[in-house]
Length: 272
Image (cartoon, rainbow, N blue to C red; front, side, top):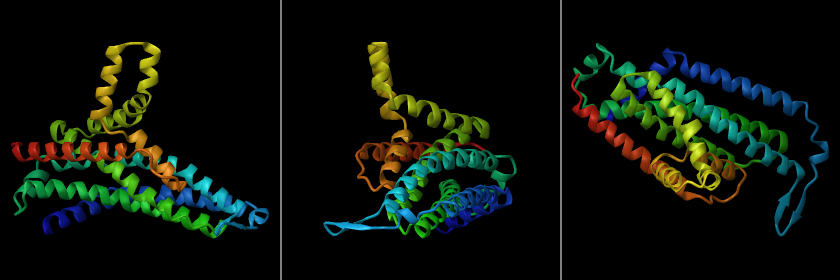
């Protein structure tokens, strides 16, 4: 566990040295300042009144804040994953470069510890950036509207979970190809193309009328991560609506575990 922790911290320092975290923080700060400017120019005087029904307090300001948080949870989820995939795609190929991998393997560290440290280090990097942005927006909307929606904070673990699933795929691709570009492009392909298409598989099958295409899309639907559906559930939770598709979480979790397990197996067998 100590080796995993040390390598995770090393990965985090690598992200700092490559200005990844600083860039993330800069973008997040710009977004927060933008929302601050909007909120300061917004007159909420007409929304300040409250009324109570069955012990529940309601306010137009609360409703507006809730809708804003639900709305921004969508671009936060997508934008964070977009930047995170780009930023983390080079971690494994850089590790496998001649000299770097020799140095790490010369240390008293097991290969699975090395890979797991890189895995958790990348996840920690993304978690910190997401937390900064989401907590900042939560504080701004809470101070402005007096509405403290703790469900909105669940965007942090859900988005981090989605990234961890895609990061497992990037690790596997990076180990096999040692190419950050291929790892990034394959992950983007699954996230931005395949996942949205599979979410519409029933409509596509109905329009085409092809039983072969329907079976193929159904097969792909069950063996690839349902990131699009996960994004939908994230928006529902941010709006304090109940989860109505736990399969998306289970599917992504199983995919991530299986793909990461394959990555560890190949990494242990690989000759450097």
